[in-house]
Image: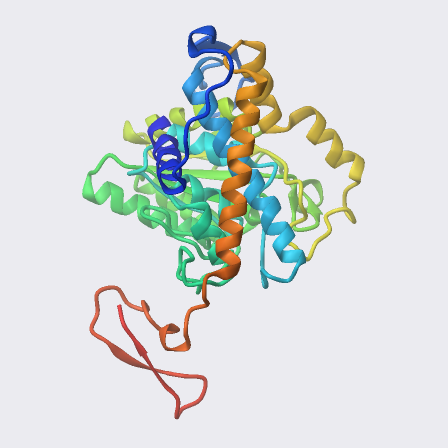
Length: 390
């Protein structure tokens, strides 16, 4: 819900000692809320679809804009640090797909649960992580969200279970979290995200089956960014209707480049689960601007013109910005002030991520178990011993 994103922004402002900048125009000059017509979702085994006439308040719009800009700028800075060889190893960037993370978070609660694959930086932020923690984790520093030992693919916060490196393996884990929600009768839902490339994994269909049998409060979301690594969906899938892949599970196909479409579809899906109707499947049609990972230039299997066309016609941040400006919900100056504030936060976080110390060797094996007594762990050879402390 809006509270989730608001909490992230409030914490950021407190950490940075940020002062609210007021545009030359007063708040009274702006429209406080407006109605928007959004694209209708395609549905599967559902009698009704999410609303197409939706309301967004000025405060919601400004918060969605700030969070999407933060994710975008954070990923661009990660790209820069990777090319400078400050970030090493696997690194999968999320720019272009920001409306998915922000829209999903606006449609659920922070008490709900979320698990995703290795393109996880944006979700780590929307789930409550800080830019400083995320950037420091990317550079392997003690101040990282996993204390510098997880890296790009393994970040966690409360009710956020990663960041998982094995293709598709997070989905049955998410189904297990949904089983816990049902067992505890806590009225919470579990959101499991995966890509179009992972959608062909057998374990995903096993998770569908169990979730349907036990009527689990599970939302399965396929972020279809058109390419599984370097293979287009048309070349890898006999059926590209991913929202129908659950067969006996209801499904929605959603415009994943529109934060309002994603928000409304997620609210609809969460209500479906909380009503005891069992799991639901969502396909978000989105696009990644970078390659699959930093080792992929991203232009050997698609053209630069294709990427530019998507940027020009469907960019999620530009779409939201245009809506707000055309409905007198913000001024250009106010949005520029947000941009400046976000850039400063990113630069400060990058400075921290390049100066914070690396974790010492003696901390390498800490936190293997939760709340357990200290134990010895074998090192890289039989005569090297390390200690693990919870």
